[in-house]
Amino acid sequence: MPRFVPSLLALVLLVGCETAAKPRGPRHPQPAQVIATQLLPNASPSFSDTDGNGYFDALEIRVYVFAEAYPESSVSVPGAFTFRLIGKGGKLLREWTFDQAAAAAARRTMPAGPIHVFQLSLLGTPPGDIIHESTAELATQFTPVQGPVLTAPSNSLRVGRVGKL
Image (cartoon, rainbow, N blue to C red; front, side, top):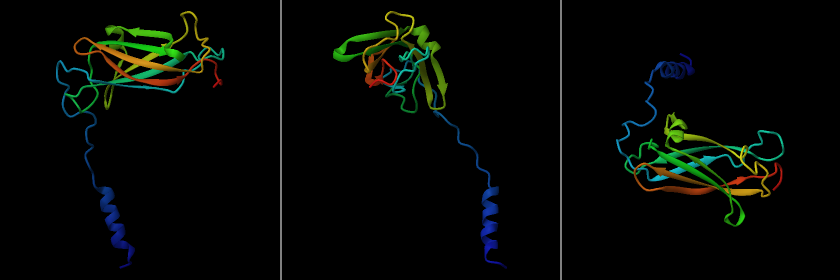
């Protein structure tokens, strides 16, 4: 018998084995009345220029909410979100608030748990997307119906003129 036959036979048997797929996501349902304890915002490093005028004007931000009492995944907790775009010297450049209904509408279910996906736009409110700074900080705050107000470390973002640093 050629030397490679036992190896080939082992390979065929291994390929023929079937394994059941493990379920993804949390194993246990989220407890009722869970209290949020941490935020994890995730935004791209810069706004995009949707109107083509050479200034950044739109940003998608995704926010996970976590609870120490439920470490399996992010949690779904009713509440409102506020985002503040802060320039040099702490100057407030813009503020967006999503009430409880808007936050619920922004909630998506992912394999790792719930996530909120928000679209922030500099258009439609004066002074629009014309910002004379090149970087800013985006502060995220969550005000749950029950529990303490949560804030997350700020995200540094590119703002202002496209291509300007």
